[in-house]
Image 1: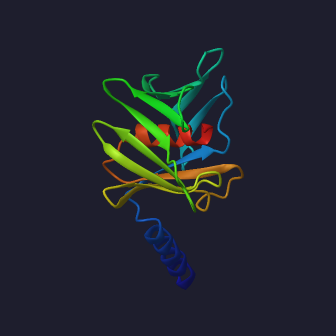
Image 2: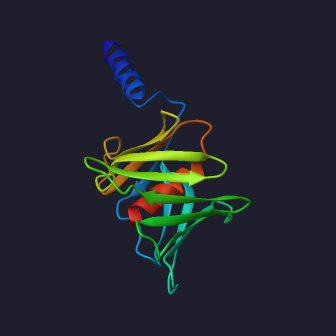
Length: 178
């Protein structure tokens, strides 16, 4: 019995470090797609949540994110004529969002995600190694990390309750493409 109690204690500590069990966590593959490839974004339990559809043979690189019913929840397109790295995230029935790389970033990679309905979200950390955070109003609203998953070439996206899940996952896919 004592061993079962220790196991429960370890699980509770693990959840506390990750902010509790109320956040949603999704699993994504590194170097997600080349344009033309499709893949699934899954929950950590292995349940499919969203499909990313890479559209080939377009003037601009395009990725479409669909829910399980096949409805488009976001369309990601790279802006070809821009001074800094920029991607557009179109959301059906909602204002478009834009993700831009900061001009000056001395120590950490920094991006901003903006849309009329959400304002500005700051994204900073190590984008290449998939260790970064989304912050809005000084509060962490999502975190991307490889530490949580033992599966090779995957990383997790942990999203706080009440956030736009499709937008944060679309921004994560966009960052992987930049």
